[in-house]
Length: 247
Ligand code: ZN
Image (cartoon, rainbow, N blue to C red; front, side, top):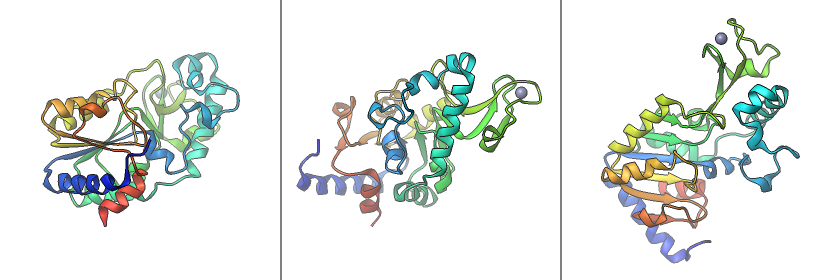
């Protein structure tokens, strides 16, 4: 799927120029950003992450209600997996860029919390997060350690669950609104490691574009919005590309 290498160098130079010219850069990250940190993409069947059970069935409101122990086991397994991984160089470069005001914010589809771990503070977590858990009844929030403990019952009697968006739930309104605002304000919108197939998250690049932003897509494979992009880079891993860019 790689484009020819000689044009990659030109593309990198163009992206550098775009970054330097931009006054409001917003970065959008997807699964490709996390898989580089060693995290399996749980949607990918080939990774065989959860034995024989389809993870799509466990990451659902239906499983939360009707198959609770498997739901709990699945998410404890995912949190354990996260604890064995760390942000990669690319995450830290994005944190450095935020501190240098080269980027304004990140919109992410990832729930690993690695942008926060790396040091970014302006992050819209569209699909929620595994950094925290909350009561499914009253909404009281707890650190994720609570979910890893024996006691999953809130003071109100409700069930304490991870703060990720499950299939059957809508995206968190605060993160969604924040992301929409950021996409509207952006003059440069850079997608990193998302195939842009998950709706409604894939709307944000188009919102940015419609509000006049340049759209850059960096992904291993082609995406559904490549034809809308001002620049498409699919030759490098994101971490390596960010390292090249920051040199
Ligand atoms: Zn509660």
